[in-house]
Length: 126
Image (cartoon, rainbow, N blue to C red; front, side, top):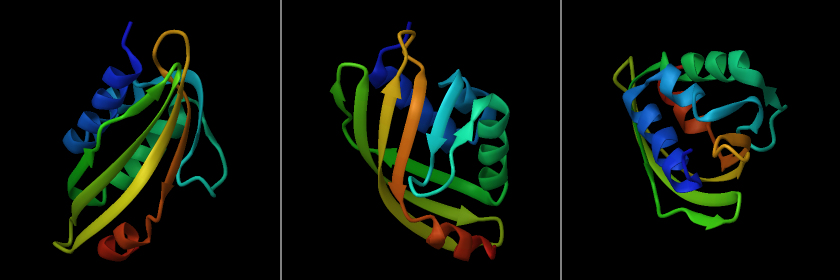
């Protein structure tokens, strides 16, 4: 069973590799994500996959780099920075904080992402 720190490592590694299967595998089957935090809840594996593929498909590079996670029991927060290159060649940088809640198996049960995706959408021309 993965620890919260290992799940976080896998989560960001899957983003960098643009590996939807590995990214979705970080989530519990019934996981809820508010990503960004002010958006409607995204629930379940199919919704997480659609989100990931929709975003990742617009970029040739997603270089998300997490800071050291702050783990408290089954919760954790981690800041991140990202340098991304859209398929059209434009670059964008974003920063944020992800707050994770884990189930008893070490999978993400809930995610809240505190970041502004506008620079990514602008770079991608969306």
